[in-house]
Image 1 (cartoon, rainbow, N blue to C red):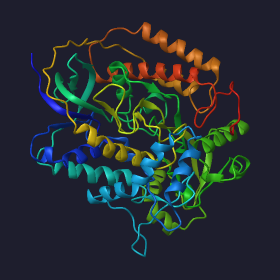
Image 2 (image 1 turned 120 degrees about the horizontal axis):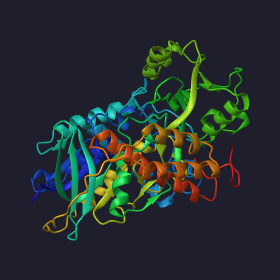
Image 3 (image 1 turned 30 degrees about the vertical axis):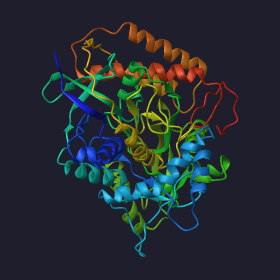
Image 4 (image 1 turned 135 degrees about the vertical axis):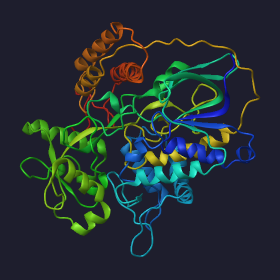
Length: 504
């Protein structure tokens, strides 16, 4: 049986997938109708982690700032495990990439002088964070989605789950897809496959990620033979709002950039005990410091104090945070302190790619959080993630447009297996044993429990929830195995049984 063929398939509709589509759509090949592109969204095109990104996107703009400072800040945050040539390439491309976002309709905040109102966040030596209030991701997502649908040749499939992928002997990718709206499977072949599927936050009991973040891209890339690296480099955001619920509301780092202070249950500021950069130290340091304070006093959370800041400034720059804190906890952040706790936020490792986003599997690309590009090293510098996504979308375009001669697809067959997996147990094991602070005994116990869960999982009729729970199980095992291979504490990775030269 023959299946529809698309030249380039993009899986994911966050900033990485949308930017890749838009750069490709500006090519003469696409405008002339000679290039077919399809973008697929697991849920709606707006259901992405990009939509929830609050703080902003980093790019040098202001007087006194320069590329070398941004490069050095990125290297320091990443424990110098970053690839400097990649950092340099991304940082130097950033101003032009911001112009592309503006050209595509994104509106960033301006100050009274009608220049861009740049914020400062943890780990940055200068103010270089472009933002739209505290809803920057939503502003970018909305603008890009609107621009995509203005394209005459735009083909976007929503509610479409990539279940499996096989590369045949002629180099064609066969995609096994499930249309959740119509409850049916279908297949597509493509010459080039772009995975822009985001992270794997649903591995944890509490995360800032959307429910669609189940590690699908990692799972597919591994099956296709790509290299997965540093999967245990999981960044915890220091200030997730402390409240009930699997999805944690993020209290943006920009609030600390504006002067908010972390305090323990006794009202004492404590970051001076851990780092000279105080509340604006890189996220790994702040998260471990909060964890240490909580453990020291036996407390369930710490507090972020913004009560000394101007209420007018809060209303202007942080309206969403103020509204959500009022809605969820009935607190007024201009008068009351905010209970916060570190929460799983971002995957710094992932699918290994080169400086153009291509994996070791020819024709397979990974862009955005799903990828390990060399930009972040062992810890992501705040607001470098949206930048990385659009940067690698741009870098990948020239190679994506170099399409191979059309080859006849070779028939393949897919195994339609689905297993009943206890997702809550996966999340419990990862949260307990692969969180901010780990130990070898716990990691080994978690690995054994996950493998036992895998061995004893019953076969069930296919459904998206059980399928993605199975994906989470596979990715969780890979993450624990990677953690057990680590020999040093670096950046976000901390095993208390290893040599400790980091802040606790």
